[in-house]
Length: 301
Length: 282
Picture 1: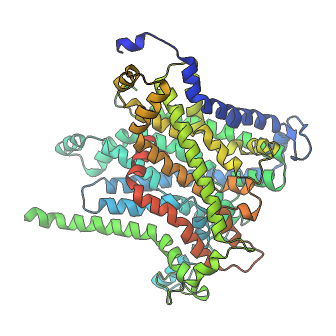
Picture 2: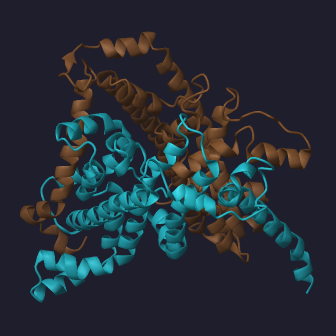
């Protein structure tokens, strides 16, 4: 604390002039829509006529008699529960591999990052679908290596469709990898040297030094990845169209269909509200349990 | 010499592992590029091969024709309109907002800053339905406005990123400029903005990526094929009504990935820095 900051002088006019776009944007694009969302969720609304108040009936229908809701929730949860740990594990392993002193590290990092910068595009989604189709490259690669063709369409078979999309997600491990890499670089090398002197093996060093030192970064990655996972949409729409047998009907895809294909805006709003509560609860749980496993070196922040 | 020999095996195995992982992760991209040059009848015969038997450039010409007389020139132009305006908009507003938060003391600042953090965590798709209804009431459907205007109100991630940078600038610089007669606005445009240039470049790149890939919003707001962005146009190839020309699709898909990949190679350093300082998703 230096002397200057103790003397509080508000400059409300200047302050609000600079943040005016945010204030307007937050009210107009976030707060008002959020209030509208909650209101619409208690109505029947087809966009053309004005919304009709129906009380809790959307929620009652969703919870008690909507099998697609249950299915889409199940699909999304499986997707997130498998993808997030898998993607983070792959990202961490590769980050550790790249956090060494070798030649060509920069080149490897570049090559491994390319899938992630293009991964969200429609182009890649369409490509992925063809890659895993019956006559696609994956079956062809298997045939040329093992001499046997699986002869299934990975995206059209109910047993493999979701797995194919999870694989696409894992393939885009670049962003968490870069974040892990930055975290790894912050761990002082002397810690490892001391551990080596004490006779710790590689696994012990990983568990006792790397993981605890990296835990704030892991927490950050975990929260962001969970939120993103629940918002998965493009892949499901483009590659599998939610099929086969609703096996890849992501929650957001179901919201989209209800709202923009069947124009049941009220029902879709109720679905969105439920998702908001789920994501908020999950984020809260992760944050609350984080003090059990996240290690902060100094409490100053 | 001895240590060289001892290190040889781990070193070779390190590179072996790296090459293997890189090969697996680049294969799908290379396959797409290769398929864009293959003869349409050969794409799914010996599909795994990465080298076309005959290099066929006509896929690109056929693909460029687009659909119903609308060529990919239109789709690229539309995408550029969305990208350029949203990038400009978000840079201008986010820098100014970040300056306000980082340097000026005003009432309820904590509250407004909390809204930035909440917005950063709250997935935007949640409020897409009410936003759609609002834009529908404004009669903005089938225009680019719903895709562009929100950017002019600042992006939470960018505000956060710029604030991190502004905090590292010593207050003495502001004071000196003030003594020299600079107004608040002058301090912002002449002192702060030039000093956070690296962060601005990073933000520009990320906004470029996000708006280039934008699909959900584009799909619900743009209904006419003349307005389609590349994302929407590529999806038309897999329209079930028609016999799909896959090699033409691959050609246009490859073309659509060219700008993001080029930007990546030119600005790699900024991207890596940006992700590591704020954790924004690439």
